[in-house]
Image 1 (cartoon, rainbow, N blue to C red):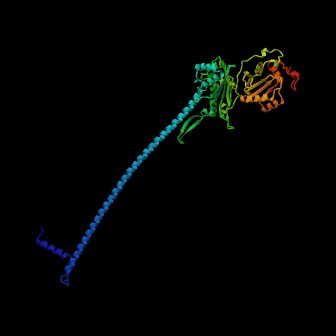
Image 2 (cartoon, helix red, strand yellow; image 1 turned 90 degrees about the vertical axis):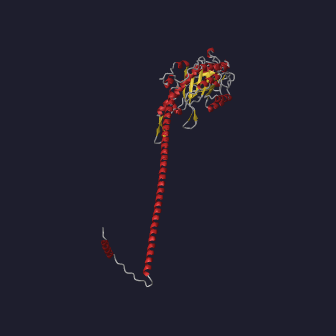
Image 3 (cartoon, rainbow, N blue to C red; image 1 turned 180 degrees about the horizontal axis):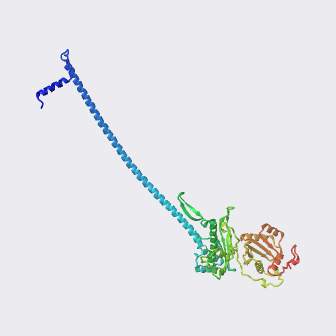
Length: 492
């Protein structure tokens, strides 16, 4: 421990080392040095206080700034959190929308693919239906057959034809609509004539299938070859004809119908003119016995070749609506026929035509046209509407119907007879009219016929020549005078 002397020595040394302050001079007024010192101290204290206040103010401002900065940072953090949550919600929403859109697109694609497959199946099913048209026909029509027989007994040929059409008009194609059918019955010939509306070309699908094209988002058809479309339609027409023939025989009693004539027409538009047309694409006459020989249920049966064996007249290009001449194209229900009478057997050599009865003369004319290669019938004498006989030309290139007026006259046939026959021909919708007489026609009649173009005149000398040529009859026509321009040997 230090001693007191040591401490005193150290104190002296310290005092000696400190600078000496100048000695305060006495103030002229009292003690000025003390006042100056107090002032300085006061100023120093004020300065220190100011400095402390300034320091405190700065510290407070710094605390405030720090708090504000923290508040801003907290607010920014809160905003960022809110924005992140909102962005997350938006992303979730977009993800849900995107997934929903993808699901909807997937379902839409599946629907389109399903629709394409369904359309393909429908096209295939329609063509398959054409192929089974014969095997799907009704085989038991005994009830209808009895009804047809009763209708004939009660109402005659017209009611019978109507009842047959009721059966044939049932839908046979996928369209499901009743088919258009007309029928007429000739009891003298035991023949049923059926006119049937064939399906249009549009019934054959022009696409063999369908596929979904994702790039275009559409169902694209796969075109069927044009030759295949035409072949399918040709077979459809042939099968329709065979089916209607079969159903016609199954519907009618055998004692009433021996043969059926089928004429198949199709309603369409002429591409060259735009006008409606109804060409006949197939015409065939078949007997009951001949049709019974066919095995229509045989899967390997070729309907086109089958019709060819029946001598059917078939359009070479049915899809192009190339028409053919029907075997028979007339409505027998327009006429009332009588039973045939063999007049020729009762005529002796050099028979005078003016001595036969009007009825016998009409039957003689019927026999004449039959011998010339036509089918002919004599109408009933009462209410014959100016038609004595009806003849049909069956040549496929010249098929038409003739209404015949037979005049057993000894004087000139006037113009009014030609006028009346022209009106009857239009009323009956016949293709041609023939006015035949034992006498002659005047110039006015010949001029009218030449202008008309579809009426043929056969006078006495022409009739005498035709009877000799086709029936081997050398007849007389005892006219009271020789017509102008004739010779006596023309009628004797």
